Each structure stands twice: as C-alpha cells, then as structure tokens.
Amino acid sequence: MLWSDSDADLKAAALEIQQGNVVAMPTETVYGLAANALSPLAVRKIFEAKGRPADNPLIVHISEPEQMVHYAIPDVRAQRLAECFWPGPLTFILPKKDTIPSVVSAGLDSVALRLPAHPIALRLIREAGVPLAAPSANLSGKPSGTTAEHVLNDFKTKIAGVIDGGACICGLESTVVSLLDTRPVLLRPGFVTPEQLRQVLPDLIIANAVESQLKNSEKVLSPGLAHRHYAPEAETIGCLGQPEQIFKYLCTLQICKQDAVLCFEGEEKFFSVSIVETYGKRGDPESQGRQLFDALRNLDRKKPNRIFVCVEKTAGIGLAVYNRLLRACSFRMIDTERITGL
Ligand code: AMP
Ligand code: MG
Image (cartoon, rainbow, N blue to C red; front, top):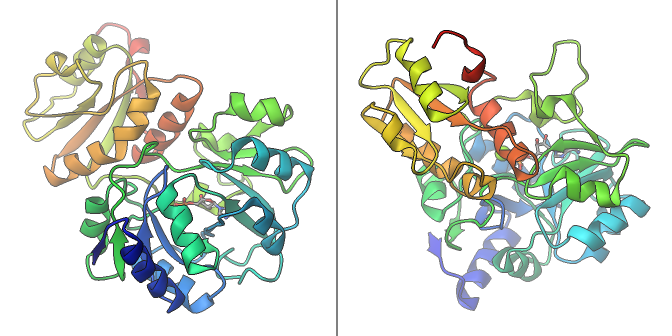
C-alpha cells in the first residue's frame, strides 16, 4: 500500500500501527520502519522484516519533548539537547524505564530517543497515540531508504504500507549521542554536527568507531557500530584525493568495463569507465549526504563488478558522509594523494 499525506491516509496508517503492524514513514533523515514501541510483538515484526540482528536496538520516536520522562530517566544535558535540537535529526541515549520493552533496546538498560522534525512523522506519532520504534527502512546491511520507492523495492508486501513524503531532506540517519556516562559520546555523526553539539556539550567525545574500524578488544558502545552497514552488493573501495589522481590510481588496477565510479557532480569527465554515478558536489557534504544512498542503490541495479567511490574528508556534516562511506566500503579507504609515482 502506498499512502499519501492526506488525513484519511494518515489515519489508515495509524490504524495499522494500533493493530500491531509495521508502516514505513518519511522523516527528515531517512525513511523509518515504524511500529508501536510499547508492543513487543509489533517490534519483533520490524526485526523480521529487516533481517536485523536482535542485538541491535531501535530508536524510539516521540512527538512531544515532555514524553521523554515516560520512557527514560532524563538529565539536564538531555533537556538542553532537546531544547536546542528537537524537533530534528538528533537521537540521544538515556537509562531506560520499564515502559520500554527489552526487545526495543535489545536487552540493554538504555533507550535511544528522538523527536523528528518531519511533519508526516509527527502527525503519524500523534495519530497513533503511541511512541514509534523505527529503524532505517532498508534490509539490514543495505543502504538506507530515502524515498518511498526505495522502501517499496526492499519490502514490497512485507509491511502494511509506506507513506510517501518524497525524498528525505538530510538523506543520512540521525546523529546519535550517548548520555550514559559522565562524558557524552558521539556514537554516530549526522546532520547535527560535533561543532553544534559542543556548543551544548563542551566535553563531548567522539567514539573511535566513528572514523575507524573497531578493534576486537574494543568495547562496543553501540551495537550498530559493529554491524556491516550501508553496503552495495559489489565490492566497494573508497578513494580519497583529487579526481585526476584517483583516475591515475584506478589505471594501475586494471579496471574493466563492469567497474563503476561514484564521483562528485562535474567530475564525471575524469573517469573513462562505462558506469559513472554522482552523489552531490565536492565541498558540499549536505548535497552528498542527500544523494549518497540513492546513488548506491542506482549503482547496485547496474550490477557492477566493483565500485570505486571518490571521497573527501571534511568536518561538520562531512564527518557523517565519511562515516557512512567507510562502512559502505568495509573500511577499504585508499588515500591516492599519498601514493607516489602515479
Ligand atoms: P537505525 O535504526 O538504523 O537508525 O540505527 C540506530 C542506531 O542507534 C544503531 O546504530 C543502534 O545500535 C543505535 N542505538 C539504538 N539504541 C541504542 C542504545 N540503547 N544504546 C546504544 N546504541 C543504540
Ligand atoms: Mg540503519
């Protein structure tokens, strides 16, 4: 079922939620696969539809900041973050209350909360009258869904329906901050940047896993950090550097016709391969974030042998784009500017 944003359609979608079914909704970050967060049976359906490992907890979406106290034990930092960044693409993790079933938190004592800014998501939460557990709407491990079409491609008849809200404005999942320890920890970068967060939380730490692969001995602060993520079917390799340098590097690798390049807009001319896709502009991580998952999904459809992705490492929203690409590439990131003799 494909619903519009009409009142009648939102009521139909909310009814599905109340009956314990799963509905996909647009948010400003990515589409979410939503179910009643207070019903373990309904939440289990999300895990089944996605093929999500049971040890990876879900974010709970609320529609008013005051609802936070029903589900978590907030502190003054949570209140400040909510005042500054809600509604918006920020999730924070707090000690949970018993109202949240353990299937939502994957057995942890904590819960992730977010108040999204998308009007359709807010209307759906209010109409359903319950908080919504909602992970990104994609098969586990695959690029997140940022349009209703992406969601239908992945889930077809596996869910009750999708509310079509067009393409997501951010295109990358929410920023996730843990407030479980004395010092707040950034677990996943997003459109709310470390620089913005530090205005409120000057002692914010960035988890090692944001920019590098977890070592076996390292403590997993967020189960999602340990899982394979955002990955296209084909082997994917990230390439840092200017386009001329990246192409010189590719020439040393015996590239073949079925290899693809994902580059920045306006740089297609540097790559003489048959499959070239773009994701936003160099120096403009906002446009990159908005288009990244759509581009990875388009490439998947063309069934390339390998995908070489042009990457730049920048601050702000750029950290979020880099973090997703590191995982899409299973941490294979080559700095072509450091290769001498090209
Ligand atoms: P997604 O549902 O795809 O947006 O991913 C949600 C992210 O938040 C995953 O990386 C989860 O591991 C993380 N997360 C959700 N709840 C918690 C929690 N209680 N503690 C730590 N990480 C969490
Ligand atoms: Mg996800």
